[in-house]
Length: 120
Image 1: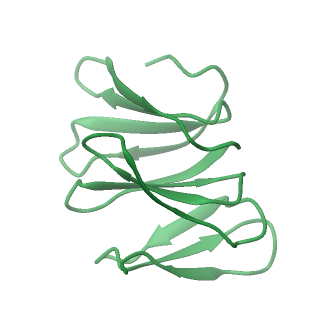
Image 2: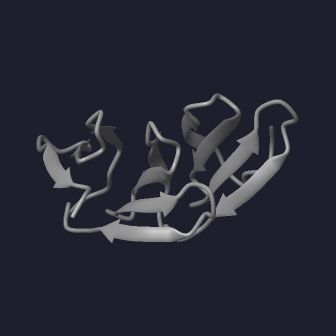
Image 3: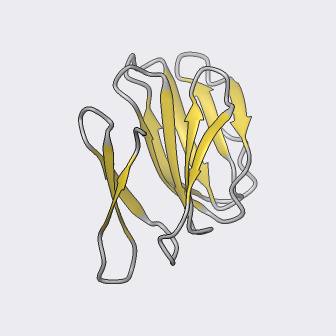
């Protein structure tokens, strides 16, 4: 699989194992067919490196965290941006999502963990 203009920072896999997702320093997210290696789609919208990715257990939502200090939630099937979370105050390097996808904890190089509510 190739196609990013810069190095890859993070990877994820769809729950069914058929799609791989890569986030890059080129500020894009690419979705790949694992079997064929073909690019399925590219998501754009971050203005900084994409550092963290996760796909919901039902395969409907993709979360991405970025050096642009945002978390974006995407419709995994269409690539449409659903929501942007802001206010962390520094780049987002890591996150974990609760099993029911109601909350997310984020971290970076500062000694603070923030918890975000994903469902309104």
